Image 1: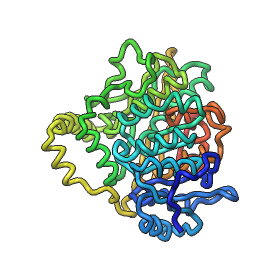
Image 2: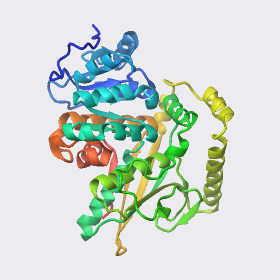
Image 3: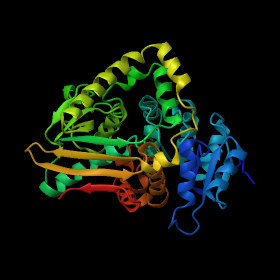
Length: 413
């Protein structure tokens, strides 16, 4: 029988270790299946799915065979329902985007009720708003609010963390710069495209263009030139390949820079990321074409007519790639870190499966489980809180969990 959250739920009562909100969406259904098929959850672990339609939630649980999971009926803009949902859980995992439209009331409730929170957003202006509204309160209460725990932006953030750790462990020096080169094979789901188009439609693209949008006040470097977003193609000796702009860098780089500030990588620390094309003349042409296309797209999306057309033509939320396509997808993120003295560390973060769907599901679910099961081991211990990043909020615990789940997170010897 479904439970409709109510105000009568006691704040101290945590019926569920994790509640999956937005479980009827494309990625949401995959998170439910991930939990249903998870091997090794501790005895007594309780989880639930949540959303606005009881019948659809029942269908999700039936489809993935999760007969023991709970059901919570709650609408995204109902503050009372969100409060009750938050009070019922140790951790809320949300896949319900666009988050700027459907996520704020839930996060507000999590902060009020001391409930940890993770999601898969890539909407940096929305995240900036969470920082402004909630960071201090969440920090004082030890509540971890950790957005961007999918392909946005765990591979980038963890790559920089691994580089920082490796430089200190191998050479006893600080890593002053990190760059990553992505190879991606996969598709988009309707929810991801809806979030991106909503950001553009709201006129927030210029806000998102700020390289230090997510940084704490006073942590921006004096010289911002080396931090501006990549536009032109380049032949890079460190990767022995042609590189071009990576469409996700406008989100990922902001997250890494926030991590650098929160974790103390150093004020001169720099991070950039690229799309990797290969070594030969065909790769050179491809990187040039993508660079030109990226510039053209940015110009085109300033037109309301283009945004309106793109919204009409985009696949609807809840849709996504086929099972075969997702199974055949993959990503590979090569990283290189350097110190002031010229020392170099290298490594790779990679996984099989569509990065925006399969890998994202794994990442956000393991992030939620880290919060639910290993709070004491997280950076800052049980009292660590705030609007954080994957690296600053989950750190080595997440690295270890993802490795155990089959993801490659490698530091080259």
